[in-house]
Amino acid sequence: MVMIVYLSIGNSDDKLTQAEWSEFNIRIAAEVTSYATTIHGAWHSHPAGRWQNSAWCLEFTTEEAIWQAKQAATEIRKEYRQDSVAWAVAETEFI
Image (cartoon, rainbow, N blue to C red; front, top):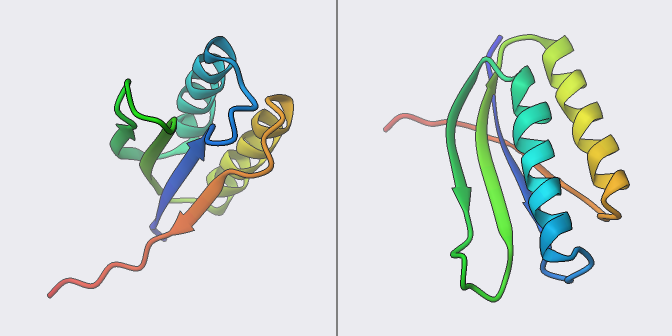
């Protein structure tokens, strides 16, 4: 079993101060991605951009790892007063 997920976070509503955004981003990057078998990439908004966003492309190989990653993301987003974290399961088609 292999599942590819794009995990995205943001602070477009400015709920978080710059320091809180930094901590939130670091926590997601350290904790949630630790359950992935492979991290295929990480992207962050331009430092001077109007919106603050980050995204990771993660590969999971067990149901347990997927569950743990989702749980960690949910707990961290609640701690940082975020309404949601995007969890997009990729469907790959080779052409």
